[in-house]
Amino acid sequence: MKNIVAVTACPTGIAHTYMAADLLRKGAQKLGIHIRVETQGAMGIENQLTPQDIAQADLVLIVSDIEIEQTARFHGKTISTASIESALTDADQVLQDCLPLC
Image 1 (cartoon, one colour):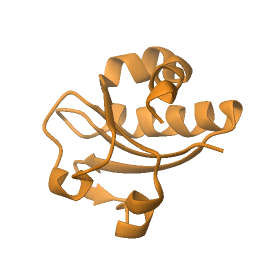
Image 2: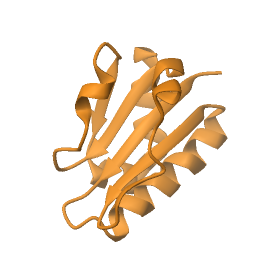
Image 3: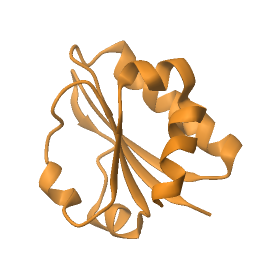
């Protein structure tokens, strides 16, 4: 099973950040992917990825239209990026697109 960690963030950090996270979780479940999603929204960083989460991940998926916080912790990992809109439109496709990188 592929293991992905993801970070979602949008400019206002309210609805779209959390909607994208939820859609990624649902899509991952359908595709048989283990995913852990951190949100960076109006409330700050929630469900923060641990160093162990990151170390065990096959891929880091950044779904954001803004700069995310604490990017240095992903140094040395394979990173894929997508826009918030793409995750809201078709989270399954976002996940499928990044699988070849795992």
